[in-house]
Length: 450
Ligand SMILES: Cc1cc2nc3c(=O)[nH]c(=O)nc-3n(C[C@H](O)[C@H](O)[C@H](O)COP(=O)(O)OP(=O)(O)OC[C@H]3O[C@@H](n4cnc5c(N)ncnc54)[C@H](O)[C@@H]3O)c2cc1C
Image (tube, rainbow, N blue to C red; front, top):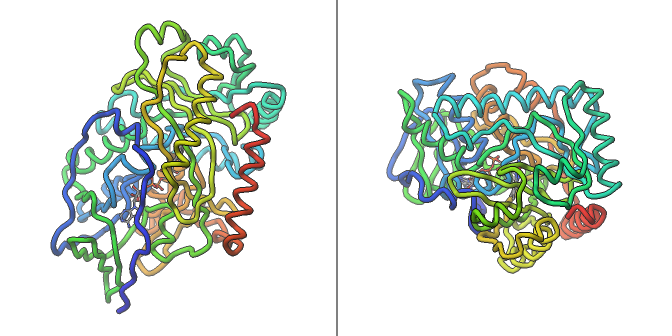
């Protein structure tokens, strides 16, 4: 029996701001000693926790374990911008939309993920800000952005989807800023406080179910061995024997030896302000919470959020391709200056507001925008590679992996199994240089939207 080692563990650059502003959360033990379970879920993000929830629904009497390498809410799940988007949002392309038929199917599936999150919020009594049905706006700053939005709106009209065009005055009324010349409001987006949702889901799974899930933090899977009728997974202090494994580690699937040279490890960067004072909020005006995605996919995402951590503004922009799966503090600081510039351009009246947090986070894309999904070895299921939109797609992948493993032939499984395998990447350093040139060119084209 060959022991296979996990080549690299996750390193999360900078703080997970959404998690930090909540204050300390529940702590879960480290895995220790010999443990046996029916199901082992590796990874405590959207995919992993959704898998554990689905398992609790379908196999409530089984023993279910989750291993998280770091802390719940500290990984990409607690560092994303929290847009759980129903509509097509293809990050790898020049526009967000694909073909009508593909888009209709994706919308239905994304709405299934949203409904799953909303049901979890209700079942586990989450605060309203964890999962809020408030919609989002594609903001435009000039004719180029407006053209993007108009093309997208025409596509939505064909699909029979609701939207509202906003002029500069309506944008200012919402944001307090004169920056945007127009916008496209889409009511179906669900906005998450991502760390709050993930924490509350973990708490619900471990504390609010009649047959609770066992969750271990700071317990990375270090190696794994296939045995006659089970898998043996070793962590620093435990040996875990499980019949079925759901691997929900997004791009780190490659660290487990799967999908080698087929996954693109991309980082994006963000800053979050300190909590705005009453005076600053008054100066800003506008609504207390809203979310703007850029009309050009490479522009800045801006969000104002009101909740447990106060009223804050979050700016996310810049993309880099980093196959080593790590980025330097120097890079975060340099891109932080871009976020400051984006903030000042939009909110000159908030010249005295400082950024309290700066961070970066991993995403996993494939060249042909397909998931890394399926039974990759006997009873070892992959729920990885969310192609950017992991709040919805990770949720679907986690549910889908369980449906596949339990032979529940759901539309999610049918969809996730319908794709080709992730395409091979060109050899390094060609792929790194090529991908970074494309990203820089597309950022340059997004220009004013940064
Ligand atoms: C700044 C930023 C903004 C973003 N904005 C959005 C957004 O607005 N909307 C959206 O949909 N998506 C957004 N994303 C992407 C989204 O965060 C990811 O797609 C999503 O987190 C993927 O979910 P996941 O569960 O597949 O993986 P992850 O959230 O990465 O979870 C995988 C977990 O596996 C753990 N793990 C890895 N290796 C091991 C191991 N060996 N043993 C045990 N555990 C392990 C990791 O620590 C991690 O917690 C954003 C990402 C970033 C960085």
